[in-house]
Length: 125
Image (cartoon, rainbow, N blue to C red; front, side):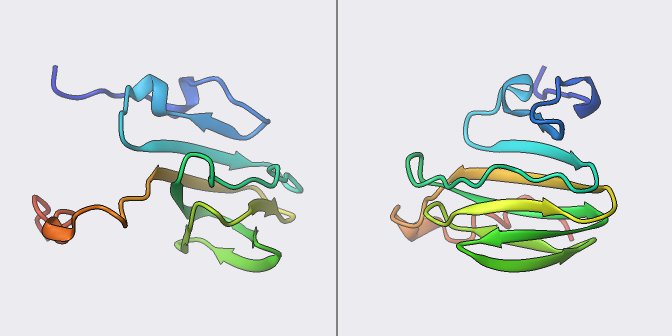
């Protein structure tokens, strides 16, 4: 089989919001988390300086605020936010439920840049 399929709702929830999919999907280079956040929910402040992972938060439902290095970034459905590894981040949910897809991966910015267009290869649009 050349793929792995998982339903996030069948993955144990952590911190009353997070469904970590890296292990169930058996990914090697990317982490994917679905966060279904109840009203008033907050993640713990953290960074990824130790593992050099950058993250992208995509809000797919609701509204929320992301504190990035002490700056509040308001998010609405459809917004995407890239956060570098060294920045401290915290999700703070408002008065309604929200849902995020969180994607993390190692920072490849110091690697050989010969394949700068690799992200677009293979996509039909």
